[in-house]
Amino acid sequence: MRIANLIGTLGLYLASGALLAHTPPDHARVFFIGLEDGAVVSSPFKVQFGIEGFGITAAGTTGKIRHTAGHHHLLVDLENLPDLDEPIPHDAQHLHFDGGETEAVIELPPGPHTLQLLLGDEDHEPQDPALFSERITITVQ
Image (cartoon, rainbow, N blue to C red; front, side, top):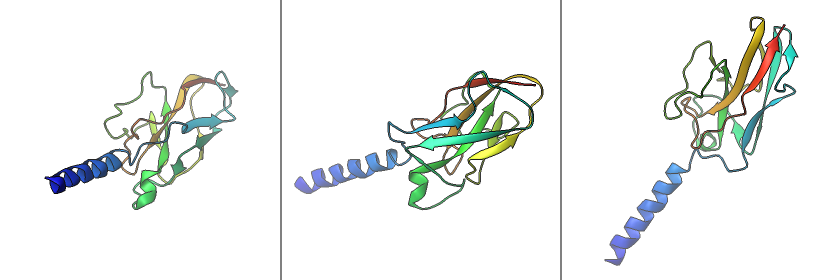
């Protein structure tokens, strides 16, 4: 009976570790560097991606680092986050930075646009809980 309890407890411990593997700490955050809500920019413009409390690694990374890091996705002109239980789509509104890039030069047409960062894991799925920035609005001249 004691061995069965020990095996059950060990199984729960291992399962909880696996469930927390891609979980950023509470203090982790992603944010824009030098680009604020309400900014007016000329296209093309540089966007810098900041992160604290979690790491950056390329998509498809294997090994232990994949549990404590991710890569940036820039969401452009989306009213809502994508489905956080699915891989992040790959299209003109969901820009992937698979190489672990922390900045990019973006070209957008004139007018207002929203931007938001969403961190993805090695398979382009958001961490749990998802690590995303505030949505900002910029105006391209």
